[in-house]
Image 1 (cartoon, rainbow, N blue to C red):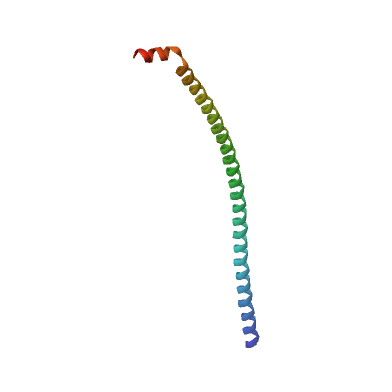
Image 2 (image 1 turned 90 degrees about the vertical axis):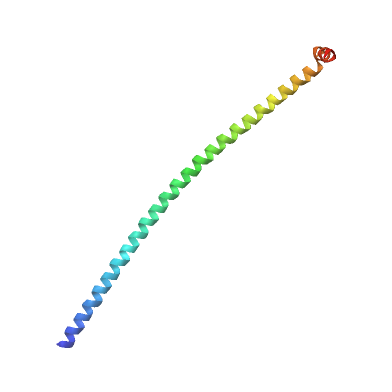
Length: 98
């Protein structure tokens, strides 16, 4: 009976250890599932941030292009005015007097 009792005790110890190992494994799997869910949400958030930043970049690029076109237009206007001033008879007369 003593051997049978020792076998039962050993069996119970192994059974407890296996149960404990399964609980640890379950905890690790739960943690991995939570981590995977958190990473998926973080990806969704980052994709949205990227989309918003790309929209902002597109808007800013359009504004820069518009400002460059406006600046170029103003440069042409100024150059045309300078050219008119250079051709104006009053400027030549004034320069001769001075």
